[in-house]
Image (tube, rainbow, N blue to C red; front, side, top):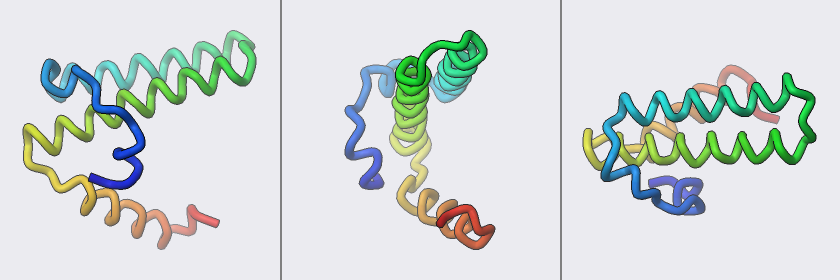
Length: 90
């Protein structure tokens, strides 16, 4: 795993959900963040929903690693390199 995933506790849903269910959960958390923004909720509330999205995404990554054998560290490095080449990082 990557150092980022090491910072996020493993959820029980890694063992319970398939990737389809987890992707739906990631979407629902992102929708909650958007709803908080559209609803003019304060910045902390929006940030809470973004953290929920991050945790749900990390669960999805762990599912991909544990159930599908994906090397998440390699994928992470590839995506960072791709995004660096696109100039996304400062």
